[in-house]
Image 1 (cartoon, rainbow, N blue to C red):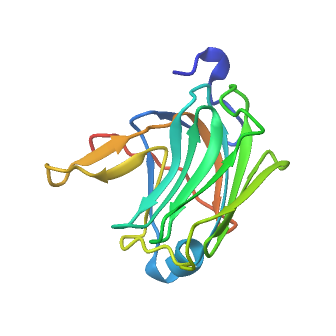
Image 2: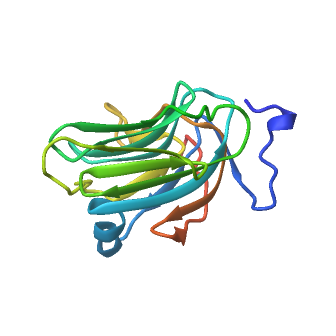
Length: 184
């Protein structure tokens, strides 16, 4: 957990994630095609001392879209149905307790990650498919959230982010951070 010196206080009112909390958005079908399926433009700021955690999770039966911290670096994993693409920014360690800005841009099967405006990496998913098939249009920030494998109506929350998140924008529109407890 973040100590007093790593608290989320900031004039923009960031949200603290505990590892079992998350923000859930259901994107309207008409918006989803432009904002998630064909492409994505996501921007957020984070602050953490934890080396691992999920920042964005959205998945269909096969396809998925995952922005995460793995061993202190930001990476984006995505599969458009023909295999996983991985973009990893290893030139900066983000689990240092400082604020970092992350921008994710995906157009078709090509993606680019930018951390703090200067650390940039690009990559592609294999194949020629450029559409992310999510079926549900649910976006989760702060954890990997799936239906529980055996209990209907219960969610399985994994790879939870512990830290602060702020200034969340999808397709240049601000998304208000609203929290759901693990039990809801």
